[in-house]
Each structure stands twice: as C-alpha cells, then as structure tokens.
Length: 271
Image (cartoon, rainbow, N blue to C red):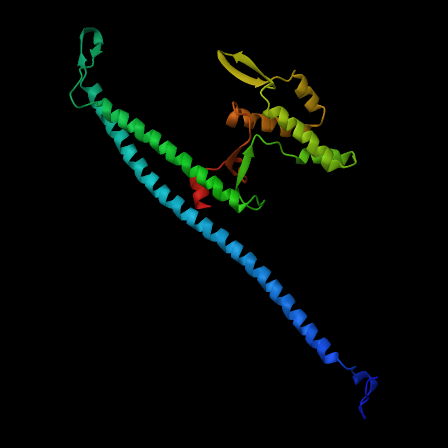
C-alpha cells in the first residue's frame, strides 16, 4: 500500500519503485538512441566509402583521359605529316606523253616504318580507350541503376520484363508476376541460343542486307502475344546481334537513357 502525503491529491501518488521504472525507461531510450546512431553511423560510413571510391576512380579516369588526349594529338600530328609527305610525293611525279605520270620515289618522303608506328600507336590508343570504358562500367555498376541518372549501365540483349508483366496483369492472371517472369525467361533463353536466328537476306539495287523474316514461326507466335512483348523481344534480339552475335550472352554497355543511345567516354567522365 502506498503512503499518501497530506495535502496531495490521488493523482500525485506514485507507488514505491516508480523511480526505478523511470530509470529503466531512460536507460532503454538511451540504448535505443545509441543503436539508431550506430546504424546511422554505419550507413554514413558505407556511403562515404562509396563516394571516396567513386572520386578516386574518377580522378584516375581523368588522368587517363588527359594522357589519351596528349597521345591523340601526337598521333594526329604524325598523320598530318604523312599526308603532307604523300602530297609532296604526288606533286613531284614525272609527266609522260599522253598525260600519264609515273611516280618517282623521293628519298625520305614516305617511310613505311613511320606508317607502321602510327598504325601501332592507333591500335594502342584503342586498347587504352577500351580499358577506360571497362573501368567506367565498373564505376557506374557500383553507383547503381537509379532511374533518375542519365548515364547508366544497360545490359544489351536483355529483354525488358515490363511488357510481359503488363500483359499478365491486363488479363488478371493468377500469380501474374511469376507467369510473366517465366515467359520472359523462355524468350530470353531463345535469344541466347544458337539455333534461333529469324533473319533472311535480301538484295536490292545491288545492295545485300539481312532483315527480320516475318514468316518465321516463332516471330508469328511472338506477335500473337501482343505488340509490346513483340517489340521488347525483337529489340533485345537486335541488340544481341549487334553486340554479341557469336557469344549470345548479354553484355554491359554505358548508355545515355535521355537520348536513347550509347554514351560516349567523354560523357561518362564528365557525368
């Protein structure tokens, strides 16, 4: 039984031990606050590491860009020198009767060794550019696939699942997400296989090219699924033909989603 202090109302009466309960409540709140602060600290640390990595990689890429720019200027200068020498060689050709000319080699005007060096440097520069894009792909992959980003990594040859999901939901299919995923996966396997290639070759005005064979049975089946699904699969099929026709697996590419095209190396560095 709690004691009642004279002059106090019943509302002010506290049972014995209420101070201990209050202490426990305060300690519990402090522990909760500390746990939240610890979780926030871990999140901030993780974000800080990601930003630090991105800034470091961006600095490396900028350094490589400057080096490539310098090499490109040197290469361009060498090419221009070769063009001048070739023009001088043509201007020193000896005319014959009837208007024909025989080119008389002039010593030092054309150096095959120098030409080979230019070709080699150009090949070397292409390798460096390829390596730079590979590193950029790694950086943008770590950043993530956020819809608000203009430059993102796009998997070329991968079918967009949304039209399959929209079609399944429109007819109120049970477990629509599972059904859409299975159908999309089946067509993805078909694209990545080496046996389905619905193309035919046509020749017009002496020009030959490959186009989709609209009479292909699988394409007819696909078109019956709806225009959205048809467009998604055909788009992925064309990407596969362009980017990896022999390997038949999806490949990453730096993509400008705002303009719907492959992003240039400069765009990715300046992003």
